[in-house]
Length: 436
Ligand code: B12
Ligand code: SF4
Image (cartoon, rainbow, N blue to C red):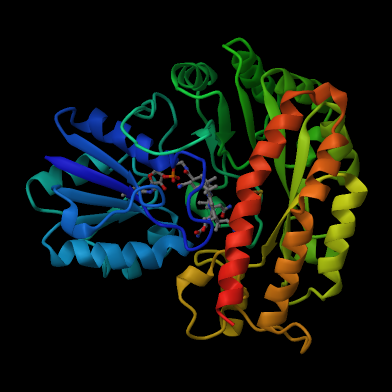
């Protein structure tokens, strides 16, 4: 049997320089279940793909909410040509009934416990409509299959844990992976990175510090023991304030960490509490940023804007925040994603008729009580802010202020990391303007 695993087209940004992790990982799970299966991998953002040109026995697609419309259209075409389709990932898990209308089978949750069964059923043409994955321990996961994917990429991803104990109302991942952290064995992670091609890595964990500083330090020391690599990822502010904070940051920097994306979420304490996102911030979040910067690590804050409590002022304050803390900022328009607490809270305010392709974080998808904050005005303020934040002058000025403890890799790689983001936001802006 042959299987074609596809990463769908993004509604904005287009090509990104990161190898889509699910492709090489699902390929590895497939070959572990049945080494005789032929695997084809396609990133639809890099390689144009048409259903009619596929010559395969099974099409597997991974979808997040923003990519669901493309996925459903493509799946419908495949099925009309007689190709069976299996859908999985965060969106089909949140809305399995919706996904099942476009698929022969839906895998809800994690794939490991059910993927072998799905492949066997596909081989005997007896796919069930729904397979519910269990949350297993993360020992002995297969290494992603390298070398099968064509494309122009700069970064690869690695993962060391699943699950998150925090409860941010806008987040999809906690419900998906659970609220207890499951860790991969440190030696397996280190061996995987050592074996994989590529010098710059993205850590896709929800929190690179995990919930256990001692384990993080052991991981960072293991990474530092390998050949020299550079990496970046998402981390909370709480960990840097802990007793082991400084030791952990220093070990992280020595292991090649050059930049951390932090969920700052909001400058307003009320908004932070309404998102239930205060716990991960700790008592001194500015102090935590300073500690990371002093360790030679560049800090980029995710700031969520345009919520029903926010005002126009919050856009302006975000620019001031970037300048005063010398941090990069990735602004996001608050987006209630299906399967989250926020979705339930905002359901009655959603603007009718908008497809999932609007749920990207660069569109307004709900109404606002303040007449000044129309959907269009929020998007306009968003783009104004994003363009200002990603002006070359501002990027260079910020990079020039990164402490010398990070020189030269943090300076150079942080710049490299921001360029695709700048390109993506410009594309989103141009598409938005063209819609007027
Ligand atoms: C890597 C990543 C990206 C990469 C995507 C690279 C790519 N081409 O795939 C990049 C950086 C481009 C990206 C972008 C975005 N992302 Co993103 N991203 C992630 C991240 C960190 C890891 C996902 C991953 O690859 N995991 C590793 C793989 C191996 O595991 P997995 O995907 O979890 O798959 C497991 C199961 O889900 C299942 N599975 C998954 N797919 C399939 C398919 C089949 C057929 C089967 C059987 C099983 C299966 O099996 C796997 C093993 O158990 C997640 C956070 C997270 N913790 O999941 C967010 C996440 C997926 N992203 C998210 C979002 C919102 C976005 C953006 C919209 C953000 C933004 N505003 O910029 C953009 C959208 C893209 C665009 N430009 O339009 C949300 C999605 C929520 C949702 N409901 O859709 C997540 C969950 C983050 C969050 N905190 O909410 N992202
Ligand atoms: S800390 Fe991150 S992963 Fe955890 S619930 Fe909040 S946003 Fe989600």
